[in-house]
Image (cartoon, rainbow, N blue to C red; front, side):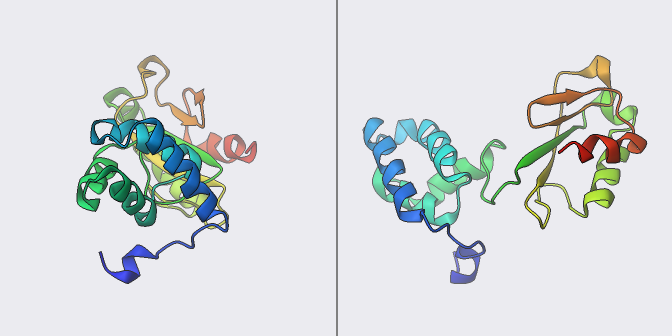
Length: 165
């Protein structure tokens, strides 16, 4: 990975302390490559996301290559390589939600917050994501903000809904 791609985001001031905590997690899991997913979950909980520097640190400590660690990180949607916003908006794009206006919700959020899917607003308040299904088909179109599900949402309700956050 080139130097420019590695340093897209400024590392937090407590970077070294967070790496120490991640090292303790790796030690708890005996640095076994078979425990990589559990290590990554814990590391993301500590760090907030999994930038290249953290992936490289985990790779070094578990005797894996960075590409092996990165492959797992990029395969699973619950891992993030970018800082996330204070709140996560997850719009359901399953069949029922899509047919009942899920795409219009995504378009409305993008316009209202000036953010694209998988990205975070400039003020760091919101990260916009989509999901194949959130299991709320009878409530379509549905979206979640953090852990709260909102049912029968339409673009006219977005401003009011998001203003609460």
